[in-house]
Image 1 (cartoon, rainbow, N blue to C red):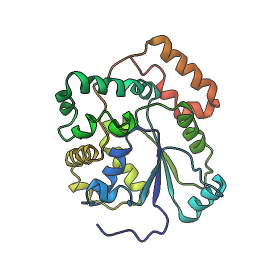
Image 2 (image 1 turned 180 degrees about the vertical axis):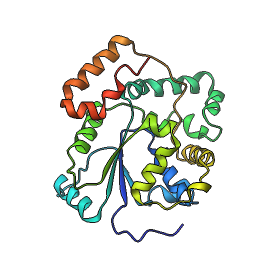
Image 3 (image 1 turned 90 degrees about the vertical axis):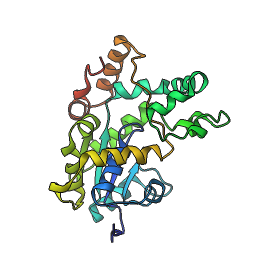
Length: 247
């Protein structure tokens, strides 16, 4: 794949960890013919990513927005149901249980997981398994940032559930960014398989089988929290679809 001539990124994907970033970013890369290994392309691919709003010394958010406008940088918010994200805070404990009781079961999550790193108890959980913890402030800040971007910014919300269940969503994002592909020859099954392979080589661990560690009362309180956190219009646009979606 030829390198882009852009001096600025073509797009920036903002997402909370465990929201499908690897699938979206790797999928876009593969869709336009990328062939490099994970470690060769992840840090250089010009569809950038961020897990928090822009925060750099001496550069204001307004200056970032001016850069987005000037270079027509597409801004994508990849948003996952907070009901699904919150339980993942307990997953490092579950993965440690695998390590201590049945480490061979970790290979069932994906055959290419880094067992040596997972079994190294001298490392932190973050270094061994990657990020799982849900950060309420970061999640809310990303939504507020995206919702307040002016209409001059070419922006899009991509919902995790749609991305994972509808192959057309990846193509929609590719169209937004201007990625060229031949629709009739796109093999989404191959892209999904290659993405899983790239993810396993990234050093991150797939989530263990989904559980439901929190009850209805807890999830009800979460919904009340987010209804009070945002204006009605923002809540309706970004979060309304998640009401009751945890059972």
